[in-house]
Image (cartoon, rainbow, N blue to C red):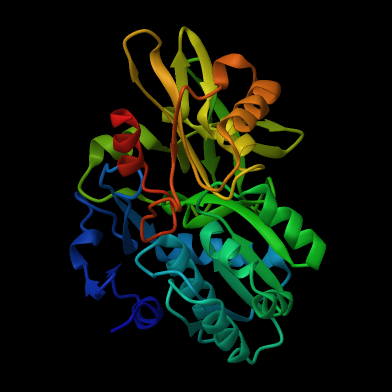
Length: 354
């Protein structure tokens, strides 16, 4: 049994890196949800394991809203693992469209991406990628030509470097910057605009606006965890762990709640510092680490050859002196999780030792 078969036939399941397993217990009304069809584990970047319960109706609503936003249904190139919500969503959209996705290994080379693209035979084609994959493709001319053939390219799952947006505009790529999570069946905000049926507002939390998402694609909760479910889910809404703002209907993602660094009594945003650094270096990661003098000190991991002096000046100019990292670590490349996100736990441990 594969994910496509399970979704087609309504078999409750969980996709893993090693295959699909049936999970009939997730429909238990006391531990799960009677309409659950899939469970997605989210232990990724924070290390806190959760089993998100997705219903068939939520996945269908997500697929329908996505088709409305990108202008059609068709055939997908499946380039992310189905154990993650991005890959599961691709299969769900394919089932709804009545097409079969072409699958390539998530660790594909540009040549493998081109070969997979050439197997697509529908007039409307789409692909979902994480930023790390997209950056790899933008360094290859043949891959760029392949990307130009797609009706829609969804990029999300992590902070999107400005280089991706600039290069997409230069080559006329049909790029959509997506924001969402397992608890919303994947992306539910495209280019800052919520998908049809989705509402995003903010709830004040420690002086910042915590993002709340309401819509038919919101998950049913967490399996066998009523306390966590009650904390995040209420009346069809999901209270995220991200903070931001909604201005004139446009959603601005400022970062994660645990990315707010209180250094010397001043709050700075790790996400905003990271965005500044990514204008100068290929990859960057920023966090706060414990410090006897500052409470937390700003620490950064960067790749590339740009000097720390230039990077510090750029951060100081954009965000002020308190945001300048006091600890720097330079690597050839950032360690990544299988879902394409930086390994926050490992990177933070390395920074604490610096």
